Image 1: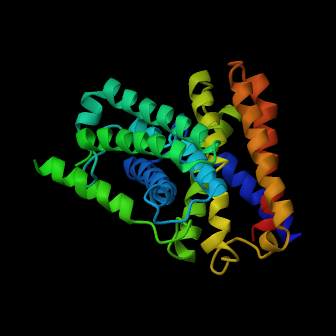
Image 2: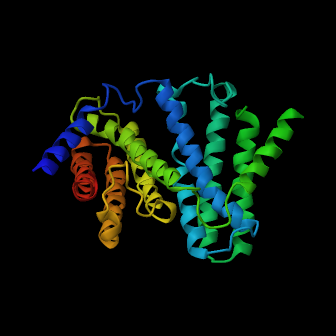
Image 3: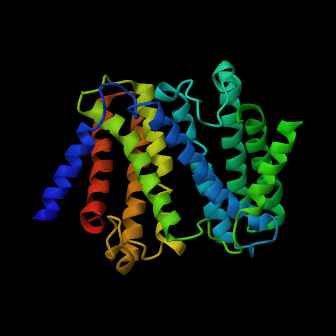
Length: 152
Length: 152
């Protein structure tokens, strides 16, 4: 009974939560937290692949695939924290204003990450680190090229 | 020059970060934070769809599609916070021990969410809320069925 009430309350809260616009954040701080969380989750997963690529972590094909898939799925996520409430929200963060001055280029770099991450997932199907490593490096370069220009 | 040094340091840090196992978290608290962040990100995106489904937010086909895609991609993410360092990590959280006592069922429910979220994405291609709404409800039920059993 308590459980059912909780479920109803929780479902009700979910349905009431959003403000009256297509915006998942109430303020800029929430948008910034969202995108920072997304990047830290990408980093957590990519870090395991980095360890395997450097032979510091024993290679495990299933684990590599799981991590690559997580990076791929997460590569769709941070960008919503840069628009709407997150638009021009850079004070106190490492984001640089150039993100919003060169939005098309920034978006292209996000797309480059998604594309590189997709190829990384495909490479993990091989089960071979020799096939995975160059695709891992391509994702790392994609991160780096964007950070170099748009992260302080 | 400063920028180049920063990039090198940052790339070096990324490559050094992982501990010597295929585990992206240093302790249970990090695993818990990871999965909680993932769920809150799902909720942020799904909340916008909920508002549209209830006609509280004006329907916008592109926005609905973006939000559904985010929910779909994020539906792959929280589960890694329940294994490894996150195994049996429930104290001080809303997770119930049953998650680890019924792992196969829990994993099936996670798969049900991914599957429902995929159908939701496909429904958003229609651009019609009448097509989207039942798929939205199916995702909501999938959340609820898992919460009912495995969330305190």
